[in-house]
Length: 217
Image 1 (cartoon, helix red, strand yellow):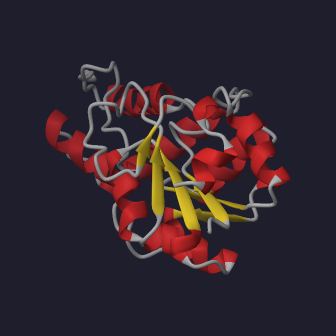
Image 2 (cartoon, one colour):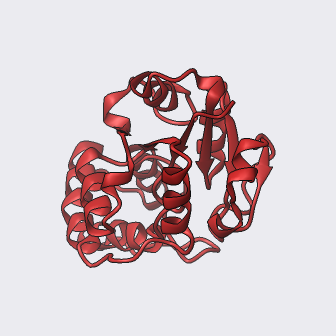
């Protein structure tokens, strides 16, 4: 029996990939590097934590700066950008209200910092829905390791087998499955070509998820 739903944040509840890219690009330009966009029009790899993306971007752009400095610079730029986000993705509020009516516990497990998560959720007026919020800073290993989802289940006091994860990326899907949970994938244009085969179900939008979708999985 499903007793909890655990949500990812970026790409699932809110469109932020372009905004993340803008922040990475701003820092690259600061170092006189010309950002190299991928086929999706962004510089980063969707689904990776910022540290791994900076490691990737450093190599790609032959950037010598320390990762810790780059992370801090990007944090400052990105927090300014996201203050203008006021709308979640389509279907988010309806799904959250549906789960609330069904008395299903809800948590959020994100590869972003706690500061960023709380800023976004406050801007979108979504924070009240989540009984538990876990950032990558609070666990030992990031996605695709199961740590973040196991920690969310632990705080909810619910067995992993009674949890459903909603994710948009390969890394997040594998994290949920590695935690022994059911996973529904909601891919975006940035993640649709990733390997999502480990998901128990793939849907086009959060609008397509009903209570029966979750309870029957």
